[in-house]
Image (cartoon, rainbow, N blue to C red; front, top):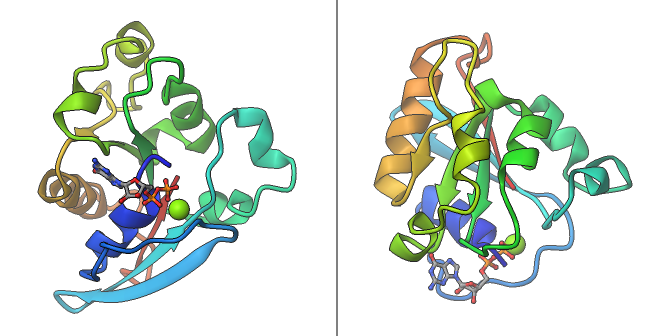
Length: 156
Ligand SMILES: Nc1nc2c(ncn2[C@@H]2O[C@H](COP(=O)(O)OP(=O)(O)O)[C@@H](O)[C@H]2O)c(=O)[nH]1
Ligand SMILES: [Mg+2]
């Protein structure tokens, strides 16, 4: 319930007022300035161990060039183990409850200890506009864009 489906709909420019529970990995394709974005919405995963235990998003996360890990600010669940499991270099954190999630500092130590291969911190987006900027930055750096200039994203 961290807002993954809502965020995927927003990224695809669709109406996100009514969303249903996600039971499988769902796919959306949108054209962004002439580039196809393949957006996969996955069911929830709370613990890293669940990811390799029949979870429907496993293959999607492996294939994705960018993974958006959603965090709704619940103090009892750090998003960082998921970031590690998905790949630090290709992950972006989305704080899906805006300022309330951004105010959660319970995982700060783990966050500051988690650096990407270029030494920078994992990008954290509070708004969809901010998230789009980070997605574009990751695409532009080239390392994670596929050869066909197609962006595959997965939202956890
Ligand atoms: N307040 C608030 N509610 C949200 C936000 N994103 C999603 N929701 C609500 O949280 C519920 C679960 O959202 P959903 O996108 O299905 O979460 P998912 O289970 O992670 O896919 C829905 O009732 C949404 O309307 C948000 O950014 N802020
Ligand atoms: Mg969902």
